[in-house]
Figure 1 (cartoon, rainbow, N blue to C red):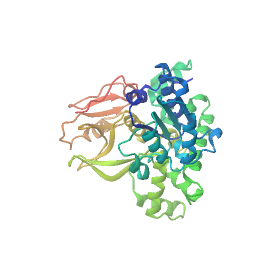
Figure 2 (cartoon, rainbow, N blue to C red):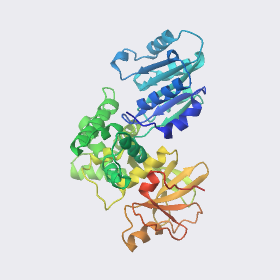
Figure 3 (cartoon, rainbow, N blue to C red):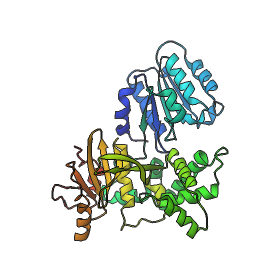
Figure 4 (cartoon, helix red, strand yellow):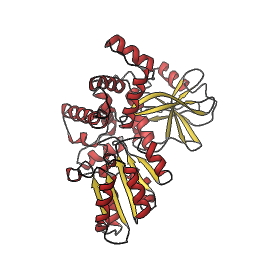
Length: 407
């Protein structure tokens, strides 16, 4: 049983027969394989002959011997019986050595449409980028959005009140399979197993030469502090004081890069609001799913906004926006959201429960002369909009009942 992930299908659908390699990237267990199945079902629904659909899941033991470009090339060509168009689906293709070469070859020599997935956020960088420049298009897939979580639970026959479910989602995130469990202990066990499985399979490999103990401590710290302002110095100090362990700056950035490649985190750059330009400086890290953050903190402090910021960040990314943290000469704005030449500014709060909180959140926009729309998002049902700054209830935003405008 699964929901139709229309947010992604609507983006991919126009490219079904376009001569570009469709690359779906995202963290393990976020639903990429199911999305491939949905694409395949749509093609069959359009009248494509199933004999012209070739599927290879490289995490299926049946295909464990196909680990080189040469073997994959031979396997696919053996399946092709005529000159008509074939639709080729390669799931978790990063397991194949030099996969970018065989993809280039398929595109150049076969009458085919290629769909590939990978659990590496940088599949389209380095060697692959140079070989496939102008020949591929990437779609980033995230765990269930809040709206998708509601739809899935309703599909299973559950009565769902989004205003109540939001707290469960803040705690445990949107990994699709976690909704199969009722007990929090089982949910936590599943998320922990998934999290450490990703580290074992995608980061601490025989070739990586990464210390399991050291990296696990580091990654747990990063997850527990996702959304907080990043400082390599603070990380060095924390481990030196709390764990009597030394982390060099070079190692910190190398470990962060590995976490990003495994799609565990998104690294967010700063936007200079006064200068109206994006900076190369990485300001924060957000977890790809708040469940990963939860299993590394064991509690949600509802006095801070980091979990909610994380959810809003992931929602904005899944909608296809570029997202930055914003800096003014007096402080910061949580998010600068950009779509082409359009943008808006967002502040996130749990509840605007006091005049001081209201002043802090709405006042964050005071130094900004830019006329782009400005919003405060919180869980309050009362509309606090004022002075041209919009207020949107977070549940309404996540359920797409109310939306932001970019100008």
